[in-house]
Image (cartoon, rainbow, N blue to C red; front, top):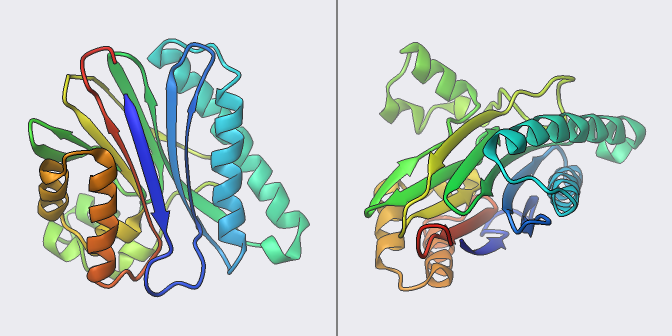
Length: 246
């Protein structure tokens, strides 16, 4: 899968607490990661950087070739990284309270496995139709699931800002996994919530469908988000499956 990504501070924030990366293991299996740090001016940036860098570097040493093995590795590795972030935040006063969301994709020749903690999202564009793959871990989503609010209300509910799962907060972490077979022409998108605060699914799908390259699509997504207000950091990672098994 061809992958490209970019991150932008946006129009309001003073610094960028998002982090993004893509890595290959010993058999060329790709791991794409996007993280959105939270907790103080510098602390959030440290947490997101730690999560992406540590997981990516560790992935490069693995020889994983199956979805089942990838899920087992992610479960163990995310638990270990959660412990590291917790311990680091407790050791340094300036990093107290730091945490991060994370959304990732393990990309095999003909399969893909997504996982997430928090409100950074994974999407798939298939046959020009955009599908949100992950489910947000925040209070608004819990209210929506319980039937207390509808989907329209959820987009503006203040509970969107109350995360129910993060990396570096609780002793236990529970990732959610979603795996699919890949088809020729599939596009995947990993993004922080800075994008979806300003662009809805229709706008995102239109940009992805009209762009001639994934680099152009990323530029346009960030540009339009900033034009709409750019109230948060914006990070977008796109992947394009040129043919089945590539």
